[in-house]
Amino acid sequence: MNQQTEYLEAWKKLRMHVLQSPAWAKIKPNSQMYIIEGIPTLVQLNRNPINRCPYAQVLKAGYDGMPADKWLDSLGEKLKADFPKLSHIYIEPNGHLTKLPKSVCYWGLKPINARYTVVNDLQKDQESIFAACSKSHRQNIRKAEQAGLIVETYDSGDLAVDRFCAVMNAVSTSKNYIKFELDYYRKVWRELSENQMAYISVGSLNSEDIGAYMVAYANGAAYQFYGGRTQKGRDLKLAQGFAYQTFMHAKKLGLGKYDMWGIAQFDQSGQLDPNDELYGIGQFKVAFGGEKQSSGQSFSVVYNRFNYHVFVVSKSLQQRVISLRKKLFINH
Image 1 (cartoon, rainbow, N blue to C red):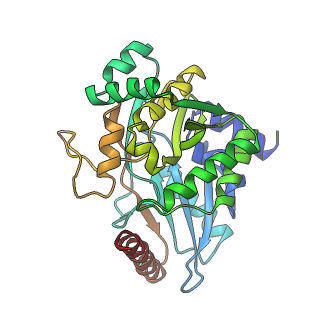
Image 2: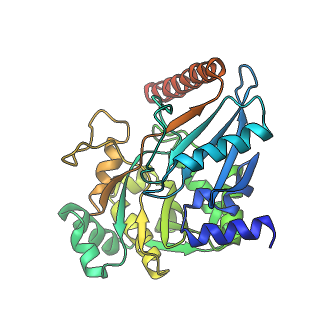
């Protein structure tokens, strides 16, 4: 059994996240697959743009409840042996890891992937899923059907990603939105669709596309990775109907849950933080009746404190630049 086959089988057995899959390794440059203490671990290797010091990141690492102490020790030993000048390993947990060493540095900046999300249980019957939506969402879902909204779903092909990219172009020019390069979307679609791990849904009205989503899925779960609605789609209140049909397609595929991928931080009572930049979209997603969930806080295992602090400063500056770009976009 070769390494990739062994990794794939372990990844399936533990029902791990899409971002830890062999397919995702082909999407992200400088990715390496390891099996550490029996845990498939996809590591992305990067360099600090300031001093070129190498660091590693593991996104959606492990699984909920996984003891992390031995895994982190072995991962560090392996990576330091392969990359002697390694600054640190940045970890975004998939769920909540246990037995974390006291020496880890918790991440104080914005994580790469949102820590908070809302997950819809697709094992319920369709009537129960619809009933769990808010009253206004149910009304707008019906209105979208009456208005003639058409939702087409693709599991492969260039037409799907062409339509998706056209919508994303429209979305990014009409609101506070920083998009990826279109070639990136095409690469993600090619790799995931070839492995039967993604679908694209496109909503249209009167032959005009008003929204698109790219949904990744694996091991019984779907993740609403990318997408949005045009201004016309929002103005006509078609967003609820389009989003509803998109995640109900995941149910048709036999998937058990649908992760809407990113909402505002919420407190113990479940109230979303109105100061969080994801507050608005979070309200929209929560109103579909899913369960609000959070992953463990992102953290780093540090091997060179000076280089790590240089990295944190550079990352902080980068995030401020992105925030400034958004503000300038809004004001113009």
